[in-house]
Image (cartoon, rainbow, N blue to C red):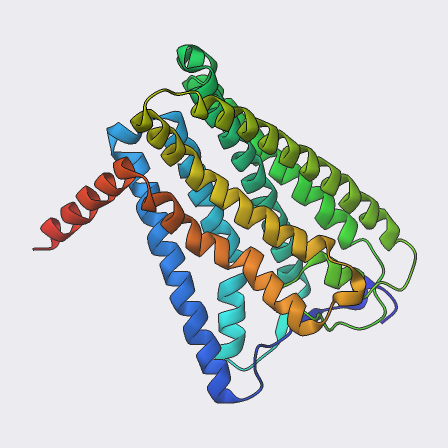
Length: 311
């Protein structure tokens, strides 16, 4: 293959070779996908229709659930279809779409998680000014900025990645189209341009990570000064789910993109990819609903309403 224009399709990595294991993979991914659809769908519906949840925290959680649905819908359905139909192929345009959408949803989600850290910081450290600093207009602007930055970030990465000449092969050692795997197929030094963009993205991501850490240092300092144990418990209940989601997102992303090349292998890359692209969207709704009484009550009312209408 002389260049990327001659590539009509890519071949993705399969989870199994035998038909029985392929069907098992399909069943497992189907279960995870349905769980993610159900969990995030319930949160989206509850946050949209329950007026008690019309607050900045649940507005951002609404956006986070939308992004989680987008992330898991970008990779899992195609992998399920390939296992079901015993194929490895994905079209060139389909691969470009996966790269763009995954970069878009993941970068926008990281931005929303950073904004949520700021929201928690203002709510706990500056409670008297919370209503004026994080009002409805500010929430919409911050959410729009997160989605717009994700779009521009994805557009830049996709354009750079698919302008690189490919001549090594069309076989990707991953179950979806991942930028590092596509760069391995490059036959020229032009891939250094995309590596430069990746380095800039890592620096920006590290900046967001530092902002989150500094925010939580100040949050926990303020929480420990609260005299009542009940007040401390309420503050921790607001922050710990978000901190758990951030930890899961950042840790899996760091392992995926910052691990040394010497420890890489197709099996390890596969496990890490599942951890950062499949597990968080399915687990996040559970994390947010475990310690959140308001959300659990809203979800109970929503489920009861649905069951009542079916009777």
